[in-house]
Length: 208
Image (cartoon, rainbow, N blue to C red; front, top):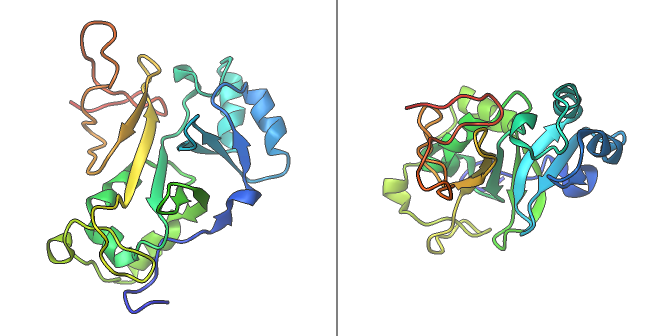
């Protein structure tokens, strides 16, 4: 444990999670998971679209969707956090708002500085840290920079980001912090000649 306190780290190695694609059917995804507890839905660029449990896929089966990435499937948002981000830094960074997007499973992906996914972080560890009165370091003090593995500031490194499927059009949106779950702003899809609010596929709700 560093002098900055505990950090975002891998709770479940990526080798212990099933790698899924958004074009899979819920049944195929369940088969791919075998006895594993979690599945990581990957994008073509290697990013994480969602982290799912078997219960999520079972629910999708009842919705009779063709693919787990379909808007009607209700794929939970996927949050990715930078590996070894000190928890005091996460607590004081805008990236902490990304955690509000997570559902009951509360598992975020962990990626290194090159974006390589290493595994999953159990967000309850962070919740317990805050509940125990853990420190919060304000980025006004630390600056807008992220942190290297030795805790030194190294330029503007993203602490986290999220991917969500719009329930209205199915467009995959990448969200950078801060995010407001009650008002996610417009969807990135403007192909219909206009704009519409981004609606979470998981709940079918949006703010604003």
